[in-house]
Image 1 (cartoon, one colour):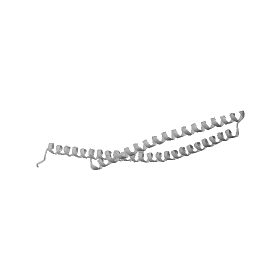
Image 2 (cartoon, helix red, strand yellow):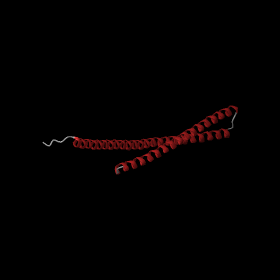
Image 3 (cartoon, one colour):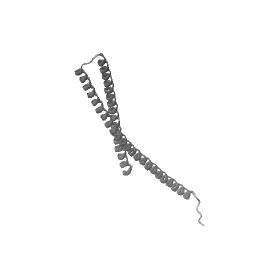
Image 4 (spheres, helix red, strand yellow):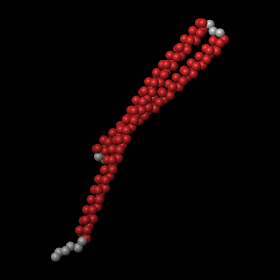
Length: 152
């Protein structure tokens, strides 16, 4: 194997590692997004349940201090939901950047692999031509030796 092929093989190996690392990061962020969205959904459901409980309690009669406690708690749930939605948005942005990075690394790997394939085809063609020249030379030599010579 030529030094050029060895260098290209090293590039392919490094590009493969980088593409795999980018894919792992993409998977990790996808999991984080799924978890953050699930948590946002749970908070939203909890808020809806608590608001429904407030409505029921108000129909049965509710003191003003208890009403303020309910209201403060719902406001804190709203803030938690808002914060969780910001977290989801941030993870989503990171995920998009990670997708772009993975795509870039994957394209780099594929281009090195394509380059390697081209070099291998060129090398095979070069070797086949050399083999054909050698076979032609052997055939020509054989023909010269077996041909009757004219000495006049």
